Image 1 (spheres, rainbow, N blue to C red):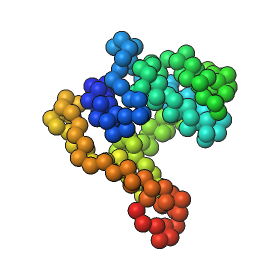
Image 2: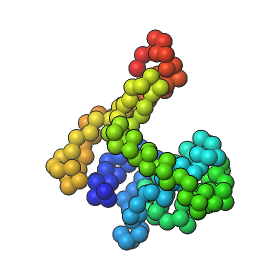
Image 3: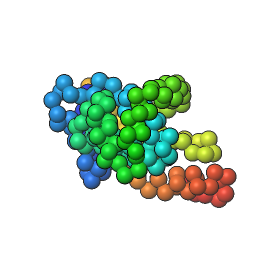
Image 4: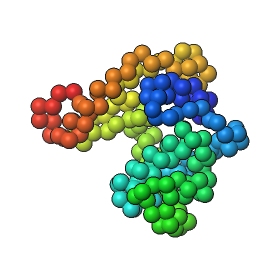
Length: 175
């Protein structure tokens, strides 16, 4: 929900100021009412390859969190796609218009409800996972009404996760 993000963004932004996150700057009525079209677009970009999907996913998040763009709108999604080096925006538009990725997104949602604790949640090839790796947060006050307090931030944890991901057999990898 927006009120949770409004509390989290300044805190998360402080962990990596270079990411450019900011509170929503556009009129309130332009806030995205859904992310379903953006999720479908990323799934459609996967048909163009993992690099295209990752680039579009990153750019859509930036459009929302750093640029205050309404990523529920097809026109905004396609504008963002045109900004991506590895995404064929015309092919993406065609795929979105055909509606072929909705089922995959809904299957992702079912999986997420069962296995994902929040974002980010990293899953490794060995079957283990890490929710919000390296960061320990508590809420001061009621979740969504109070504010998050970062009690620990250790970006070094990602090196260990990458090593474990690169060596799924787990051969003497510390981390």
